[in-house]
Amino acid sequence: MSHHSSRPYSPDQRRNLFDHLAHQMNLSRIIFALIFTFFITGVLFPFYWMVSSSFKSYAEIGGRNPVYVPSALRLDAYKELFDPAHKSFQNFGTNIMNSVKVSVPAAILTVILSTLGAYAVARLNFRGKNLMVNGILLIYLFPGVLLIIPLFAMLAQVSTQLGFDVQDNLSVLILTYLAQTLPVGLYMLANYFRTIPSEIEQAGLIDGCSRLQVIWKITLPLAIPALVSVFIYTFMIAWNEFLYAFIFLNSNDLFTIPIKISAIFGDPTPRPHVVMAASTIMTLPIIVLFLAMERYLEQGLVSGGVKG
Image (cartoon, rainbow, N blue to C red):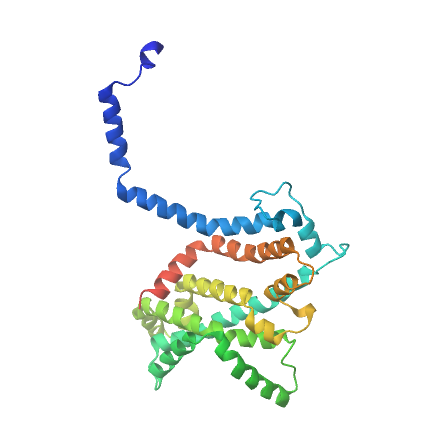
């Protein structure tokens, strides 16, 4: 019986097998597989190279021939970032906390302010409403480099009147981030609020709720996916922001992560493996947030960006 099962295929069976494979692997599927493979490789390989390079020696990462797999999982780069006993200790934990102190309040303030503003745009009728909406979109179109000079000049004048320092002030940096994150939050939440039936809110008003109670008890629970999306998206903007932090921060103890990575990269002694280790640490919180809140992100971004 085993001898019978090991007999080679007949010519007709081979032809049928090839016809079946040809039918399954048609041109469109082959093209899709190639494009998908190229896309996944283009997305994942730079991340793999960053993580693997953080474990390489300087000879491996700086050699003429690329080393795709480190010979050992060396922790030298991470020790330099976090170990006070290291001769080139970078005190990277302080920079991480600076980024947290800036990014989390900026994201929370953006969610609160954009919720009130977006609800007004979506539900209330008032004079200048269209001008406000168009102004939000207009500000969103301007790159941050065009806003930073007038923003810095305005804050410098205010600081002289109120007696606080503009530079090396994380609170001021949070306010500057709002100029970038508020237009995004207002646009996304306004579109999402338009997808919520107004009849639900009208029923709440008839039952005796005030407008703020309607927002708190009815609208916000229904808008949780959009609120989570806005928080993560604005947190990501503040977490990765470089230009404003570079202009407003001079003290090494107040550097956020992107500024610290730039300082390590520009050091006279090149240490690319340390740059890769710091970049890996910077990337991890964003990945964790995206994976943890993927369900909310999908609902919030689709409704906030397409509908309305």
